[in-house]
Structures are given as C-alpha cells and as structure tokens.
Length: 278
Image 1: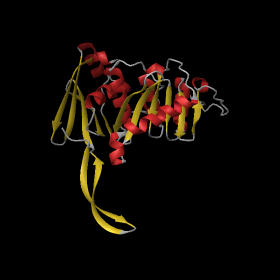
Image 2: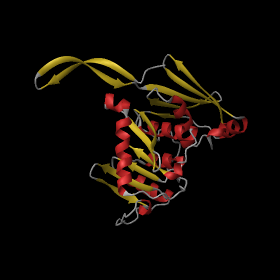
Image 3: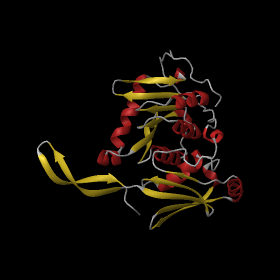
Image 4: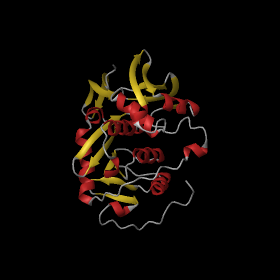
C-alpha cells in the first residue's frame, strides 16, 4: 500500500544562502469507490485509514443508512490508484442501484458531480442531543487536536478532523489532504467504534463550508468547532440543522455563530441568517 508521506529532494533558499535538502510531503492518491461493482465516485485522498474512509463517505453521502448495510470492504491497490470495493447487503444494494449516480471529487471540492441545485442544497438532518460545554472545555478540545496531527506535524499540508467527548476527551482523529476526506474518515471510525456523536464535538482544522456542515449533521454531531471562519451558507445550514457552530477557535478564544445554548454563558447578538428555505 502507498505510504501517506513521501520524502522528496528540494533546493532550499534562506537568508543565509541556497542549500540542498529534503521535504516530507503528503501522498495524494486517486481513490475509487465502487458498490457491488458499480462505480460511484473518485476522490483524491491520502492513502491512510481507507476502511474508515469507505464507511464514512458512504454514510455522509447518504449511500447507506447505517454501517449495517455494508457486507464487506475490499481495498485493492492498482497501478493508477486504489479501489475501495464496498459490498452492500442485498436490500441496500438494490436501493443504491435505484438511485445511483456518478460524481468526481478533486481535493478541496465537496460538491463536484452534484446533478442539481436542489441536491446541492439538500436540507441537513436535524441533530439530536444537547450537551453543554463550558468555554474552557471548548478551548481544551481544540488544543487537544493539534498534538495528535502526526501527518500535519511532519508535512504542514493536511487537514484534521477530530471528535471530543467531555468525559473521555479526544477519542478519535483522522487526517487527509482533503478536509472533506478527513471528516469522512472521522465519520467512519465513529461508526465502526459505535461512538455516540450526539454527545460530543466535531473538531475541524479547516474553514467551515456548507458540505462540512452537511456531513457533520449526517454524522449526528450537535456541535462543530473549527479553527477558521465559516461561510454564510454554512451558518444558515447549521442553523437549519439545529447545530451549534463555533469557529475562529484560536488560543485567545472563539466565536459562536448558531444555537449558542450548548455553550455555557454564550450570548447571541447576531440576527438569524436563515432567510432562505434550505
């Protein structure tokens, strides 16, 4: 199997002059998803935690209703990439084939191949669970993510997605060159380990775009905490899902954009951005 990190030679310029060196960089591989031999998607991703990727992508994209729909997963390395052969149980395979569509998703693009505006703007499921976190717990959560980002610490070029539980702390973390892929891999490990997403926080090292909210809602997480800012559509989508969206989480604090009741002591000044029907 391809390694997630490759070391390549490079020329290094510094104020002191030019020298030869080596740089660890993340691998980027074409990952093909097939369900019962039917092609579905090709994503550019880091070749790591691929079983989690297969499960999480299937769940967040709505291919399957639960992990129980999966019979087996085969990871097949080919000359031009990796194929994830996902075998669904008979009833779920029939349902999938009835609504099958093809799409291609390059790194950093979560909506490529969507066939209609209505599909792209699909309403997210309402999240359940109302855990309440104190501000210091949110800061602890986001701070706990960075020390475990092994790939990013070495390459400075991948995104991370983690899950924080108030009782156990950071219980899962996944990395990938694509932020959507990292979140899908997180969804996969949460499903595989039968963790309860409605009682914790999804942590993101990236900006919060609409598809990140849609995927987090599909996971069932009531709270997102991200280091970067959200888009306006992401805020509207989070509000529609009943999700608490916390962003711009840095060492000096964070900002709460929607449903502040899950953040102890939060005061909500901003008017609702939920003006359009989602």
